[in-house]
Length: 154
Image (cartoon, rainbow, N blue to C red):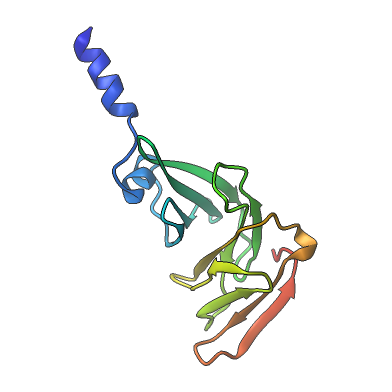
């Protein structure tokens, strides 16, 4: 009985790193961004060709991972808005696939992140965003705007 209790305790403890927290969910993000010292979010490919958003958050016991969103992806480019009701001060996350040649995505509101890596990107915003407030644009390495718009793009 003691051996079983020890195994349960060790298998349910929090992870030592964000990577380990993602690994426990069997997710390997293609792109991650540190929203602050205690929260990392990442975009990953779903087996059916969709995209997902995952978070690793530092708690008292260590890093804990959770899936925030998974949706089918019709192809590049895409812009998805997710409200994070978790315990962090980051209330909105925007993510998706970038158009060819894009290296950066920017929002009209103060945000963190936006670098394109592996064709995907993720941005965090400190306040709740509604779809009608979302204004975005993709830039190439020279700062030229490749694509711009508002709301979600599917």
